[in-house]
Image 1 (cartoon, chains in turn yellow, purple):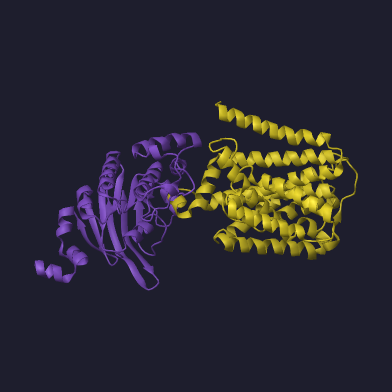
Image 2 (image 1 turned 45 degrees about the horizontal axis):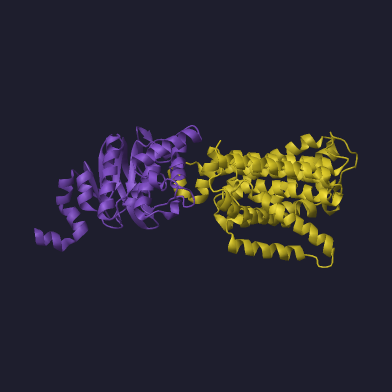
Length: 324
Length: 241
């Protein structure tokens, strides 16, 4: 291992240790909640990044997959008594199948047309969740009874959620790292860079994108299930509304699309801002955090088109095999 | 190696290719010439699967390929380059070639090894870590060839890889094309520079207005009145007559 690689490994270990140990010293539930949200959104933005960052197919419908995960595990538990540990995988499979169907229909659309089609898809899912009252109870939402137990994936303290969230985040980062260093990753990037050239070189651009879409939707659903277990109450506005799709795209873009760590960095920047504003302002200026999101997005797109992490990486880790 | 029978292509009401029939044998270098708009690149697009011919058949190594996608045709060993170069702009030259190699090689490691061999062969090792977007025209053309070569083709379609090069770069590209033939790759080459195409081709096919007007050894095609007429007009042929 050369000197640069050694340094990168040390930084990585320090980073993991920091996020794994710090919550042990934080006694305040308010801050622990912050950690959980950073992990959830960092993982979700990472899942989005697989098809939309590496594959360049920008989705504005990932709220649907997040919601499918949340509703599937919650409904299976409430109606059938199925443990969320099982239910979350059922949600992942359903999301993957729907993601592939969406891909088969919409992948022929290019860039902004694809984004618009997925936006419509997310809206349909959101409207369904609101109006299919027989299944989802509509706007009244679904409440999970608070009986902490590991088999029901309900933890007595926030610390349990912190570590499960961290586990999900690390899983997403590892999967992304693995994809980036596999044929799938190379082929996705080739498609994103130039579809005709990729096809002329034997890249099966259709199949490659469907695989990425399936992985991305399934991961989004898993994270959605976990989020539902954390909230213990879900309704369309908390797990499937349009704003979720916009927010996840925003985090990833500002952090740096098509990189392993970028989407997490985006969440790491935005979530504390959101929490801080909400705590300081309360309901005095509702929507102010969206204005600030917009401002940051504009600044980043102007001065760091590759995102915050994209820029840092070019500057400090130009040839790193870890920080990608 | 390649058998093309009666293929036609229409863009709306315009016939761009009309009943084209020809063969290419293993190990040959066949030139494809014709004035602008004759249908040369369209023919390449049909052969490589980017366009579909409504009629006729294309047999490659004995197998019908006219209904296949470009990616599957490439995997069967028929690869093409683009006249308007299409580098993966944000990837390094090396990774551009790795992607070409990946469709045939089992893993990333093997593909990287192959990519380095190919870069050596096309003499681009010094540009290995530059992004695709930073290359000059000559290097972009060379990268097109390198990527296509990485897919281990049996038949390579080269679309004007010598256009826009200075005399020095041109000489380098001619040397490269000769090296490809020594590797046993069959070549089908579109080229405008007559001295070059005459020099490297075993046989030449001439197109004009979507019709195959002449086919044969370079000398014969160069002297054919129909070819002269297509390039220089009726008056020139009459004046020479």
